[in-house]
Length: 201
Image 1 (cartoon, helix red, strand yellow):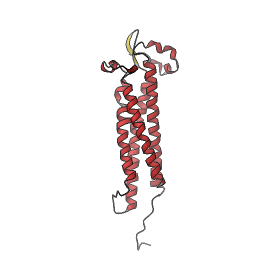
Image 2 (cartoon, helix red, strand yellow):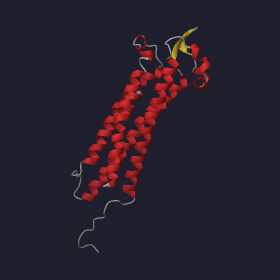
Image 3 (tube, rainbow, N blue to C red):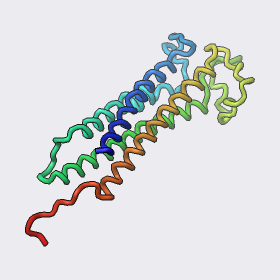
Image 4 (cartoon, helix red, strand yellow):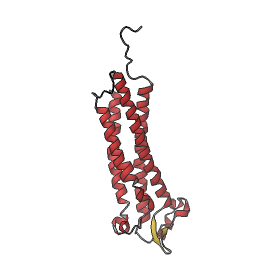
């Protein structure tokens, strides 16, 4: 019972993380609050991977819904033995938690790549990735951020939002990993009672 409550609490934590991922990803399409750059496709290419909206957002909400249904549906039976049914539900929980790791891990990787690449912005040489060749060193050298003339404050915008996405998806990965460990321990360490058939010595 305690592990079930723990699993439900962990699953519930995934919901706000997924919703915030969607919001943060949407904000990446509107640098400095302006819509013109999205319509003219003058955004970093990594925002078009929909890492926060789709994978760490909508897909994680679906995974969370399935996990909550599995944890709260005590009457589910897949075979004659109650012990067998519990193990089957635990196995499904492990599978969907692993899928959650894949979805949130995708968002984590893409967001990290977007952060290191830097924004697509207008410089004195035209529209380009001004910091693409710096291997992320621009992140600690704010003096060169002025190379991006437009959109205004786009470097700070990208750094803050991609960092938030990395944090949100990283937390999702951790929560799903914890769930996998808990469910595996239940499955492998025999948390379920062993049913002994009558007449068998």
